[in-house]
Every structure is written in structure tokens, then in C-alpha cells.
Picture 1 (cartoon, chains in turn green, yellow, orange, cyan):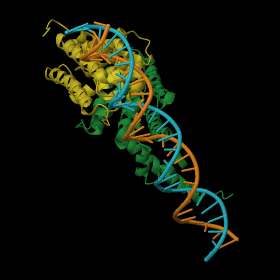
Picture 2: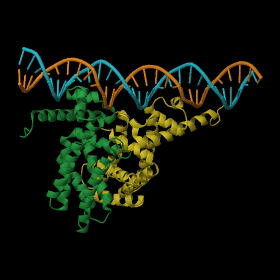
Picture 3: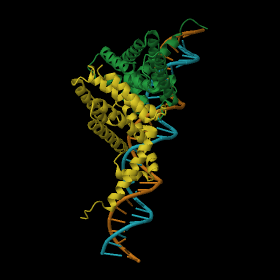
Picture 4: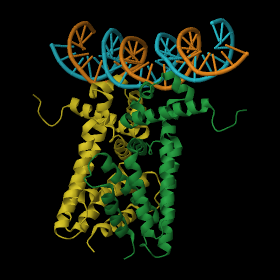
Length: 204
Length: 204
DNA sequence: TAGTTCACTGACTGAGTAGTCATTCCACTG
DNA sequence: CAGTGGAATGACTACTCAGTCAGTGAACTA
């Protein structure tokens, strides 16, 4: 019972999983789930294919592990940013800024995340899980909007529709940046987006 | 040289291609490109697999044919609606309404269209083609916004970012409807969306 | 009626790939 | 240094599936 911190084995093991996930994210981002092969990932991680299966039970689980990490981080960061901010307008800006910045620094993650959205209408690879994540994300925005609505800060429009619109607007700007179609800096995009959204929903 | 209208063969041939494409759209919408099999489509169309290859050279071409038709229709309808409308605000409403209504009646198409967006960051199935379609769609919106900007109808924000935001907002509402998460009627969604967008961009 | 054509069929082929497992390698122990 | 256990390997298996093609039969033709 050598119970101090981490055993050597644990360290090595974590290092390996980490390397595998890094490689997986690169490969899945570049090719998508179906076209990426397990051999690609093994090669990218610098290990033999068999080794992958010592750490993960299947290709899908590798994918999910690579994906979940980012999704959780992004969701947590968004939530935290919103909670910290004061006024509705500040919350909005915090939300937009946090997400755009996160994606800017995790481009491989964004590509997977974005691709997975495409599967939302035919749940396959990630089954129900990601659908629920999306629902929760919208629900968080929805709750925020309902509160603001009660305080009369925003106009009386269906909050569900507003939440979808805001969420996807942000995602659209992310896509634009990833495709290299934006000349603006992140901050400029944040600024423009906040302007549009806030003018769009605030009570006049 | 029996050159009146269509020969019997042509009629039969068109009927077959039509049936195949209808089946293809159903299958691709339900499973996505990779998980859909050619056998699925053949079964859905009520013909043998070999028959598909009399009408289309490959799985990918079936997919593209099923996809292109809808994309072109939607793009044409959007453009036409916008051109017919008078003021900027009317153009916006025409754009939103046309698209939401089209998707409402072509749900299978929307699922393919939506899924294909996910591949935009790793061009594979549709290669460059769909990327260009998307670019053109944004460009149409962008041009519209630039004109309005020159006339001082909307506020001075980057038109590219605005176009992305608007486009994706509409797409987000489509997704919401397809997932069955919207209690609103199409017209109510159109109304809400127009409100948000117009308030968001019009000059104050 | 016998002959010809051709759309159609579906069993088959071959390529590609997820997952396995007998073997090798190496770090550590006594 | 010999012995041991477990991590790592990669050739191999089992399977899926896009695409093929020899064969069938129904509709025409002479």
C-alpha cells in the first residue's frame, strides 16, 4: 500500500492516455469519426495499435473521451463566466467572450464539436449523450433569458427560440473563424456579436 | 428519331432515378453518409443493388444528387424571395420565412444539409463544393447587408460577421424545430427571429 | 414462334479496418 | 546475473460493404 500521490505506473499510464487523446483529437478533427482509422491514431500517438486497446475499449470510447473533456471544460467555463458577471449584458458578453476564446485555443476540439452537431438529427456515434449536453446548454441560456425577461430587461419573445438563436449565432462566428473567413480579432468578433445580440433582445 | 416529348424509356428512367433519390434521402437523413449502406437505399427504393449502379456511378454520387437538388432549390427560393421583397426589413423577413418553410416541408433534406455542415471543417464527402455553396449563401446575405449599411439602414458592424450570425441563427431555429423542441408555429418562429435579427442590426 | 435486346438482379469479390492475442521486451527484484 | 511480471507489439482474424458481372426474363421484332 504505497499510498503517496501517484505510483510510477499511474504516471506512465496517465501520460499514455494523454498522448493517445491528443493524437485522437488531431486525427478526428482532421478526418471526422468515420474516416479516421485506429491505425492513424496509434501512429499519431507513437504507439502500436494494441496499446490503444490497453487504455480504451474501443474506437468510439477514444472518440468520446477526446470529445467529452472539451465539452465539459467549455460548458464549465461558460457557466462560471456567466455566474461571475453582474448585469445581463455583462453575462452575455462573458458568455460570448469565453466561448470564442476557448475555441480559438482548442481548434481541434471545435472541429469535433462542430461535426458532432451534424449527427444530432441521427444519433449514432454519441447517442443520447450529446443531445442532452446541447439541451442543457440551451437550458442554461434559457434560464438566464427568463430571469432577464421577468426583470423586464429584454423584450417578450419566446426564450427557447432566443436561446437557440444566441447559441447558434456564437457557433456561427466560431465556424467563420475556424474556416479562416474572419479578418477580425477575437475581441472584435466578441464586440460585434454582443452588439447584435444585445440590441436584438434588450427591451427598447 | 422519335423526337416528341419523352420516350417511354426516358419516363421509366426518370421514375427510377426519382425513386432512388427519394429512398436515398430518407436513408441518408436517418443514418448519415457513412452509416447508410447502398443496400439500405436499394431496399428502400425497391430495386436490386445493381440497379442503382445503372443510374448512378457511386454511393457518393447518389448522395450528392440527393443533396444538390435540395441545396439548389433552397438557395434559389431564398434568392428569389429576397429579390421580390422591397425594404430591407421585408427582405429579411422573406429570407427567414422562405427558409423555415422550405425546411419544414423537406425535413429529410434538412437533416442531410445540417449533417454536411459538420464536415465543413474536414472536407471529405462533398469536398469543396458545399464549402463554396455556403460561401455564396453568406455572400448573398453580406451583399444585402452592405447595401443596407450604405443607405444607413443598419448599424456599422462587420457585415461578414453579421451575415454569419444571421445565417446560423436561422439554421439554429431550423434545428430546434427538427428536434421537436419548438412549441411555436413556423410563423411564430419567423416572427420572433425577424424581431431579434432586425432589432439586432437596424440603426437605432 | 424463334430470335434479339436490354433493364434488372443478387451472389460474389476484394479492399479496408476494428479488435485480438501469442510473442517480445524491459524494468525491476532477490 | 537469472528470473519474473506486466506493458507493449503488430501480424492476424473476422467482418462489413462498395462495386461488379454473368445470368434471367419480359418486352419487343421479324
